[in-house]
Length: 263
Ligand SMILES: [Zn+2]
Picture (tube, rainbow, N blue to C red):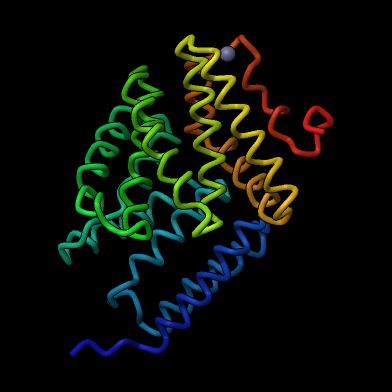
């Protein structure tokens, strides 16, 4: 029988704390907690334990958010190798995002396709599992967008948006993902010369943020952090440099709830 080590529970608790710090935009504190988690895992010899790759995925994400793409890549590759050794489905969309950050779009696109296929098994699962497939779909949508396959990107973003629209109330942190998806959709529609649809997506995001600001101000603060974080990813910057918008419909200022245009 598998004996679940207490130290792994402690690691998960520490990792949850780390994630919360990142979500609040406390990057320096989060990075300190991350380094502490890595030391703790080594001290208690947790690297071979089931569930450890979950921590590595979080760590990879967090290094990416801190701008250290090299470390993020190193960790996610290690995590994927461990998962494959144990015949588990790796979270390879993270690798796709990181490869896009360093400009390796062709490989990033191929891995995003694999990530969607690999997570098909969760397509009909409950939302907390299905989100793994949705997350891979979002990554593939960005890769398709970057590579000029606008119809595929649109179809995927519609599916991702629908999922978060239906389930964010049950898990409020998903409102951040909904906001990020609406922004990507707005940019995609305008890049496709579908400006009315682009404006509609932007307006949906603005309305969402207005509602959150009124009902759940601290959550809208997290949405702001999430939108800023995504905006600073190199992959997003590469994408926008390939598909420069001149219409002005998706100007970043439109999304700032402290901006007077929203009041
Ligand atoms: Zn436009």
